[in-house]
Length: 119
Image (cartoon, rainbow, N blue to C red):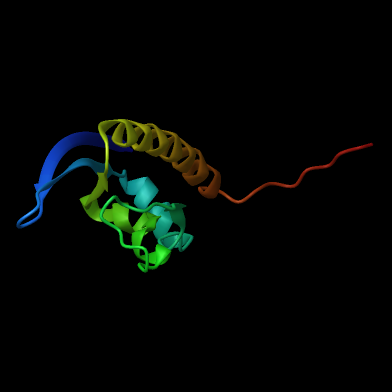
């Protein structure tokens, strides 16, 4: 798994320009990791609950979830933050989540073996 994270500053709005800080995530999965995801039907697994800075109060939370299927096939995920600090915190959370995802995929590679314990 190869991860690329970058930060950009974006100005949005027609009359009243607002500055947002975009975090761009790109994940290149190995062939084996893609095969594990497909064989175990892990595409719909939710990785992160999040709300971008541009979200309205009445928007559904499911709209902003980051799932495994969003990272498949070299897709780029973009997320807007209100401040540079929030963008950096979001990046740290992404790195932790992707490390856990790597361990989770290796755990899903093979079925468990039998274990005998004497207490």
